Amino acid sequence: MLATALAATLLGLDAQPVRVEVEVLRGVPRFELVGLAEAAVRESRVRVKSALAQVGVDLGEYQIVVNLAPADVRKSGSAFDLAIATATMAAIGALLRARSTASSFSEKLSLNGAVHPVRGVLPQLLGARARAASGPSLPRANEAECALVEDVDVRTAATLTELVRALRGKEKLPKAAPARAEAPDVDAEDLADVRGQAAARRAIEIAAAGGHNVLMIGPPGSGKTMLARRLPGLLPPLSKDEALEVTAIHSVAGMLGPSRSLSLRRPFRAPHHTVSEIGLVGGGGGDVARPGEVSLAHQGVLFLDELAEFRRTALEALRQPMEDGVVTVSRAHVKATFPARPLLACAMNPCPCGYRGDGTRRCGCTPERVRAYRARLSGPLLDRIDVHVVLPPVDVVELQARGGGEGSEAVRFRVERARALQAERFARREVGATTNASLRTRDLARVASLSDAGRSLLAAAMDRLSLSARAYGKVLRVARTIADLQGAAAIAPAHVAEAIAARVLDRAGAESTLDAA
Image 1 (cartoon, rainbow, N blue to C red):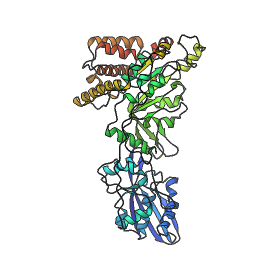
Image 2: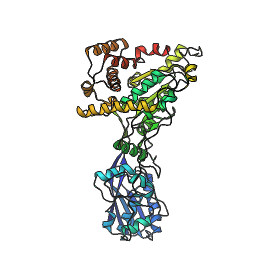
Image 3: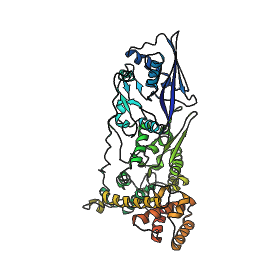
Image 4: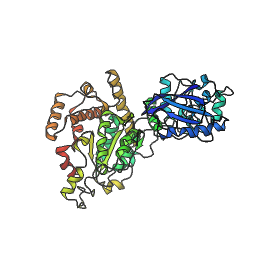
């Protein structure tokens, strides 16, 4: 007898529906599973047999063939266990076949029939809502995540026995309890803690207001890490749609605990400089596709400390997501796409020892070593970083001064006001962007037009600093953000001049600026 059940597999954040077909015949006992399933899925036959035995179902006299359709899509993970178990029971007559196909299942079984949590529940539910699927059954351990998706009647189970009783009509599975969203992050690390570094403070304010990538160069102890860690506190809270997207990525990565639900906090990721290319941009062994650090930091901050110490292949892999805002991972049978639009904050020393240009004569690096150190960062990569700033050593007078500088709350107020201006402008002109940094080239001229004086100033800078066409667009976007911070409708020459000053580390000006730090 043939029976079916519904499940799903994830390709990136997209839930691909899978139909579990089970054919059962009497004969020499065997259990075959087909449909391009990886090892963890094939091992489900052991878990299913043992779990079904706990509810009094013996498969010892049956020939069982399980097909996971469509057969050309790779199936990974152990979330097919419950769909296989319910379809098998329906095929041998232990359940009504209509009941086994009424819901979609995404659960992992233990040998004693307990239902364990699985990864990627949120994107699976979003896919079920798009397909108008009714009554998905999911692990109770994922309850907080299940309740995030509205308009879907989600039921949760803790054991196979509980689910079987519900499918036999003896009881109803409970609905997922309403989730309680986490409060926006109250930044414990205040910008007021940073002493001095007025130029760097201004740079990260511009970066936060327009979503611009920023590079900080300075000797050890100049405050680069302190500033980067305070960046999330300058950003506005996540909107509901942004929070769902961020939570879905973390769900696929298996980073949501049993009690964690929707988070309105901006993610902050700071991978070590030994991270691999796959760890940074995503991927995995075999046909597995997992999000990398650049996707886990989506809508937040990705901080790369000691930038020049990262593997060159890993840094170069960042170039595409920095431009497109997405990462596409391709394997033999899998092609997955993950969102990847964080604010990239980078920090590095001016030379291998870190003290070049600090005025103390502690630097013993030869010019050849300095050039080799700086050559670890390619021109195309630096070209994609909007704001460059040099941090000098902090003076002892500033360290001993009473009271700090302006706090995060005041800066965040200006950032939110600037972003509100951008959102209003983009909506009015039907521009498909969320921040100035994400403006497409064809929309740039519509929202960042210059006066004659501004165009002359930018043209002179292009010639003197040998800026690329990409850098030209970056300057325009940063100038638009500076104008927004001041509440100006038009970009003034002073805004252009400040934006150009943020590119002085480009090519022609790199050596002189670093040496003068």
